Image 1 (tube, rainbow, N blue to C red):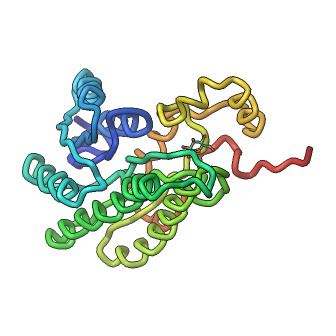
Image 2: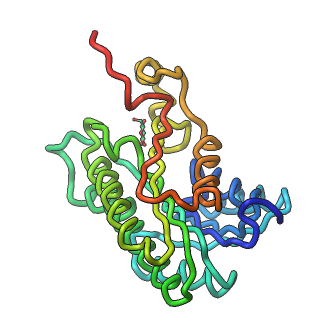
Image 3: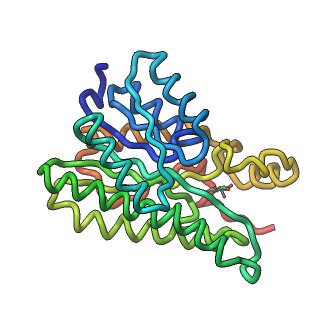
Length: 257
Ligand code: BGC
């Protein structure tokens, strides 16, 4: 397919639903071959691939739980084996768990940090090792959150993982620049996706949130995907070490009442 990303290969973790699914579809529509990754919902991955193929795009599916080192290695190996290269890595897979700080269990802490941080960390490492050996440039796009910077009471594990992702991105922009690899974060605010299911079903909570968003609505996964496509394209060649906030103004909104 022709387009800004023609000839490129991209892995999008967690692309069986939500923001990841939209990013996979968008990158494919701009010409990239996409590795659709899922952890536990094969039907979601099938749906993503079907949507990509319906418009003439190319996608393969690779199952991997990014919190497991063997799965990470297999995801990278399968990508190179089946598609011969990998240019763009989108670290999108993420989970959140709500709990008062004093009630957080070791199990919940491990689950959130392992997917959101360890997964992105070591998949990026596997990606970079391949690029370094092949002497090829690349793009890393992390889907973090406004909560890489903004508090989110009762989500301490999530905030810890996203804050760490911000510093990881900044650090890697310096270490990987000489290899021709850029790294940036997209920090979405409230986006209508499955991670927000309980919020979307709780009208008073949702109304309270919408009041805090200057643009007065939630964002869409397609709006996140459009920014990801820009960051993956040649147009963003000189962009590295930055977080792009996409939140309808939520993060800047403060009012006394
Ligand atoms: C979280 C959502 C939350 C939003 C805005 C996102 O990172 O996943 O649960 O509604 O931030 O606070």
